[in-house]
Image (cartoon, rainbow, N blue to C red):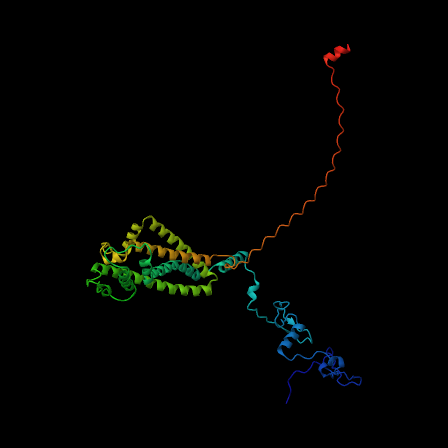
Length: 397
């Protein structure tokens, strides 16, 4: 078989073939990897150990190539595009370093000054803004407090003990139609008990006097039923306000420091102003005040009676004057005590006590003035010669 492959050109200009076996050939290997490794010296053995963990390998890479970020830090210099980082040892080629941006890298960019000022303003307004819930509860507490005091005072008046005090106090007018103090106390207790129990109109309608006649007329029983509806409604509203007030106090104790004190303080002021205003109207015109009060709750013609009717004999005009005074006094005293107990002192407001004024240093006693030496007595002047008179002149002549 003939080999048609072209062979090497054996012309004169071609390079001579190298000698493969020469007697002067040294023992140096043809490639560097064929050279025998040198034994490790003591210094190399004592050197740093090879990194074993991942964190140590990253730290070693960062020490060799500063462009590679170490754990917990950033790269010292970002590699430029088209120029990948070159290995530091051995020249084993080059490799590109990819660095992923951190999630908080956007926080390092400062926004414009207007945006910074706007955020500061929003932060300050949010910090200084007070929640609406505690404020609302303070307002409700201030408004409910006078009503609760008034209901409690009315409940104290509509009780048998007040009847006993009134009927037995000196100066209370007697009945001109035959009721004794014991009769008044008995029949009046029935009437007062009817206002606070759940009995029907028959509780008063079936009462009879000693002679067997009905004690109250139909008009009187109807009016007392209207009074009972007003009284029970006010007591129910007062009980509901007490429950809401207790809930508000518990809420303010948790959400607002000093909120209960501020609400009660405002409520006591409202109570004092209201009771003083109503008391002034009652003093200036009690009859007009009493009439207008009944017109608010009762229809005209249902609350006027003759002097012979049982209600007028049991509860004369003086009784209502005394009841109004007691109600006003109870509300006034309770409001005044609350005002004193909730007065906004520095300690209750959480402010530090005032520093005592520094005492003025006592003025140093003035040094006593040196005693003045007594001035020397003036020598007596020689008497002046008297001017010669005309007669002496004439004698000399």
